[in-house]
Length: 173
Image (cartoon, rainbow, N blue to C red; front, side, top):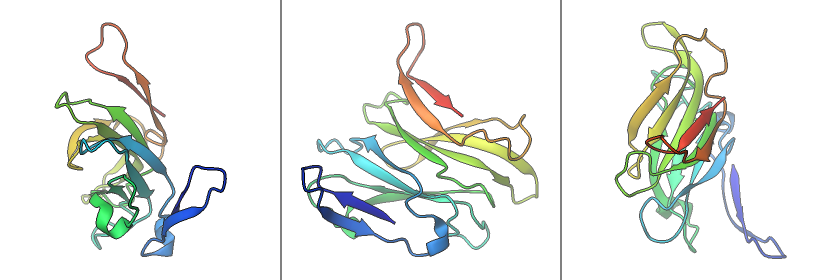
């Protein structure tokens, strides 16, 4: 579950959302991910790395993306859902804003997974995915050289731009 509180002195509860299934670990990671729709408000992402939304992909994980703004009716603010594509992928291990990676003028965000078992039974290490403003995957950074469970993708953070690079630096743990 996740809660939205007023940032003022009272920190009063504005909204809360409890996930559909308790064992999804809904709310495990929450992040402001930039202004995806250009309305001047930060959007936010909430992960459930143990979510099973496709019966063929148990514990694939999911990340729900919501439009920010003064009205926190989460049912009406839903922007989209990113789903894990492999069994036990655990998508949503980490979520972070990464700026405009694809150069289209809109903010993008990163979502990592800890690894999983592909439909063909092959075990893989974690991945880092970049999503665009429409919650569509645009890039994948995988580390298949690591053995299953090596932890690649457990954490992600934006370091910012560096001279000589084509975009911001993203660190993956």
